[in-house]
Length: 331
Image 1 (cartoon, one colour):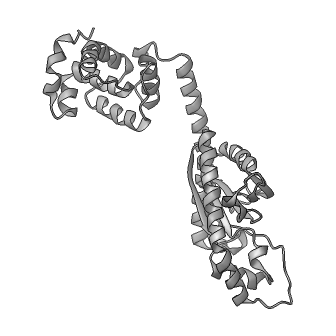
Image 2 (cartoon, helix red, strand yellow):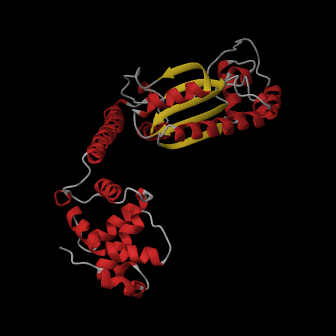
């Protein structure tokens, strides 16, 4: 993570012992700042409905600080460096970047912003947005008093930007001029692949969102005309069971695999099978005094109507025997 040089003295000798003593004194404060900031951002990002890959947090180690002090002749690097405490937000899509900036600005004082995404035309390809921040005065009380005034760097990048940054870091080429001329073409092509992947990932997300919106507006009433996939299955179950709790998509993905395995490949067929088993399922639910979520209702209705599903998914298929007389024809 980057740094700012606020205090330089080219003629001064670095006092490593004094720097180490101050670092040891403030290290717990920097750790607490990272933890608190990560907690705040996690809460606010989740509340805003923004999905992210990860929040990384770290405190710059003393050897790195001493090296910076030597390289830049910093008299007091603990005060001069703005990135001793640092967070990195790794999001999924480029469109998340401005949304995350809004969250950062709403919860922290932003002292400086360095945009290496929109301003960079370097084919070498490092992209990220860096914010130098500190806690806002609105955070009061003993928990925050020791944190106020200390700076922290927050980096924001997409997962594709992060992957390229990791690759280029391990290659140890910091800029285009570091690269041997016979390798530049290949490295630039590699950088371009990460850039294109980021663009395509964003485009795919937009197209999927449009598809899901279309499903929600004209939810799959013409079931036979709809292919069976995760997104159409979600819309189908929400329409079919509007008053039941909604299962997680991970569970729906497993259910999709199960029904495809028994030869159900379209929503029309699935709808007919669930209709056939619905009365039997409702009787089972009432007898057991339970209220099933949409996925449970679909699974049990399917188990009632299809012996192959019942036998493959349940250890004791005989538990349904008392209800099978209620199964209707799958017309």
